[in-house]
Image (cartoon, rainbow over all chains, first blue to last red; front, side, top):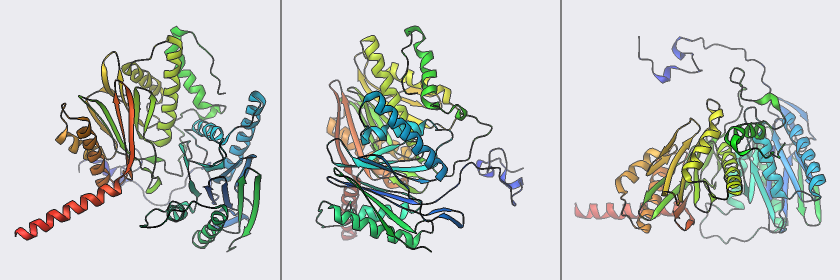
Length: 239
Length: 263
């Protein structure tokens, strides 16, 4: 009998060499993947949260008009992508908690406070996580743009820009280069203006729609400034 | 859900555990850790790191890289893996990013509450014990936390204690944790002496993290360095290892040119 090495074990307790490896029926999975990409950029006095509006599952498209940006307060927008059921429930829970805070503390939650609260809400389900990739964009107490990015179980930090969702691995390096000026030598680092940022977001989503099947149909951009939240919808590839 | 009630002091430690359960379970009571029907997660969580800490004549040095990886993707290249808890205690974290972040937050809260209730600061040994006992109910679950408490207290001077979610609680003079730790240990064991000056110790820690990030795929980007003395912690500016790599390459090619000339 050969040595019982760790490599011989695949699933717990089942030795790979002596186990059936043909088609297996899996039991019910409570998760589904509904696709979608979310992006947020923070500027000097503005923040942009953008998402595509396609809702898909497997090879089908459920809806071409299901944006993933949700307005929380006058200065904060959250983008949620992943499993749509968990996105809806999570935004309902956040809205409820915002109301509770408003009623007990007589003030609106700041972006940083919402981020910290979301972290604990997500960790509360550490052993059955919300399958949602969240990005919060808004203005902080000083009026500067703030972006907070999360993982599904509540780890978060403040960034200048972040992409999340199905095309995030394609978009993030592009943003690193164009907004963070990374991996370039001898280039002048000009601060990002609002118009340039909006144009960049549109270009980036057009590129994502080309290469990611789950991203497309339309782009919803929410621009947050001290005047309020301005929404735009731009068409994308529908194939 | 959030607001914890004040409890009697004699049941302090015991009720801590239930407070943590309340804190964690939130409003959904059906999601307590249940091993027989664990739901398979469709996404990877952030893992993989190099952190290290050692004690020398000038205090405690804590150093870490700044990469958070989720599967094969670099989820974030600029994470803070070393977090101050109070003026004389710093925690380096390794394992799952979310677990470390939230457990550090819980620890900070409990230490602060202890200080307010007992009008003295808990010792580093006490902090480590408290953390270890708080993590114990989660042994066997997926919680993956490996923290090194680096601090200074007046009971016993500089202290370095490793606490992990498996239940280990170890005091020592030198610890390195994470996927890059074997590489870091090699460098540290080679160069560490009690009598190092502050600059030599800092440069040794930087070198250890740099070598580990070079060889380990899951560590990289920048190095964070903290120095803790009797006066408290101080943080060195975060340094991009890309510059260090190019300096090292330059030095090697100069050596090689010298070798070719000699032959």
